[in-house]
Amino acid sequence: MRVEKQEIEKLAKLARLEITPEEIEKLQGSLGSLVEYLDLLKQMKLDDVEPMTAVDDTPRPLRPDVQAEMLPKEKALANAPAINLEHFSIPKVIGG
Image (cartoon, rainbow, N blue to C red; front, side):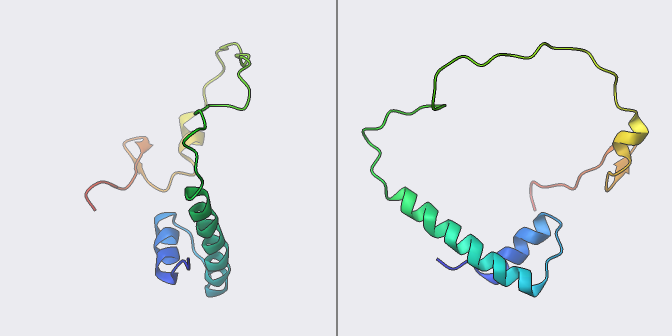
């Protein structure tokens, strides 16, 4: 399946990425191969396979919960694209 140029441009805009026409062509090939592989995986018959969350069932060790020094507010907000009343400001994503 071929991934269209418009789809890649839309994804780049949503991710706030600037991509060149050469990168779009390269991404079309890479994403097209990925979509073809996912279609191949969809065709697999997995009715008799029991669902699992991990390859092995051994318990995972938990790290201790240690209180650490907080990041200063100025440093945390330094790279934010927009700030509103000393908080991160993000664009509305629901309702278009």
